[in-house]
Length: 250
Ligand SMILES: Nc1ncnc2c1ncn2[C@@H]1O[C@H](COP(=O)(O)OP(=O)(O)O)[C@@H](O)[C@H]1O
Ligand SMILES: [Mg+2]
Image (cartoon, rainbow, N blue to C red; front, side, top):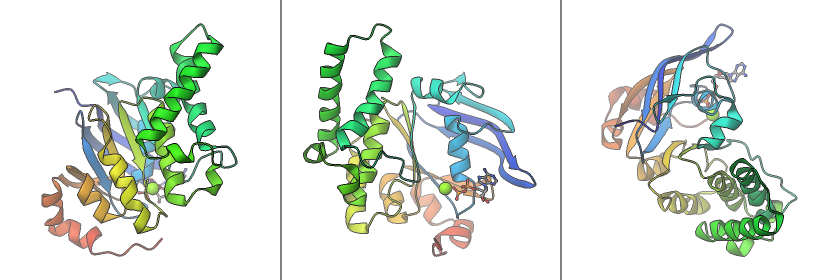
C-alpha cells in the first residue's frame, strides 16, 4: 500500500524552538485521520510543511510515493494537496458562488491550455452550483459570505478546497469558533465526502474528532507522542495526562 501522504524524519525549528522533531507520519489512502495536541504543539506548522507554505528544515514529504519536499505550493495544489485554513480566508464581501468559482477557475486554468470562455464559464457555474448543493449551500450561493452564519462560512472554505479536486484534504480546525449547534453540520459534510479523498483533520473539538476519525495522532512539542485508533487513544494514560484532561485556553 502506497500512503496518500507520508513524511520521513521531518524536522523544523524556529530559532531555538523545535516545532517538528523527526516526524514519521503516514496518511493511508481514504484515511479519516485526526491530528490532535495542545496549542503550540506544531500541528499547523506540520500542515504548512505538507502544503509547501513552509519549507522543512530536513526530512522528506511524499505524495502517493513521489517526493514533493521541494515542489512549490501551487504545484502541490495541482497534484492534489488541498487545505483549508485555520483562520477564515474568504473574500467576505463576495458571494458564496464567486468565492467557490475563483478556486475552481484556478483548476480550469491548470487543466486547459486553451481557455474557451463560453463553455468554460457555463461549466464553471454548473460545477460550483453542484458542489454547493452537495454541501447544503445551494440556497446561499448568491449571498455574501459575510452575511452567513459563521458555521456556513467555514463550509464555504471546505467548498473552495473541494473545488480544487484534492486527493488529500488537510483541514486545520474547520470547526474552530463555530457554535456547537452548527459544528454538527460540518461533521455531516465531512462524513459525506467521497472516500477517494484522504483526510487529515486538526481539531480541538474532541467530540467531533472521536466521531470522525478512524485513526488519531497525538502531537506534543513537535513530536508524535502516540498514534492509534480512537479507542487506543482514549485509554492512553499519557494522552489523558497531556491532552484530554486539559481544558482549552483559547
Ligand atoms: N513563523 C513562526 N515563527 C516563529 N515561531 C512560530 C512560527 N509559527 C509558529 N511558531 C511557533 O511554533 C509553535 C507551534 O505553532 P503551531 O504549529 O501554530 O502550533 P499548533 O497549530 O499545534 O497550535 C508555537 O510555539 C508557535 O508560537
Ligand atoms: Mg494550529
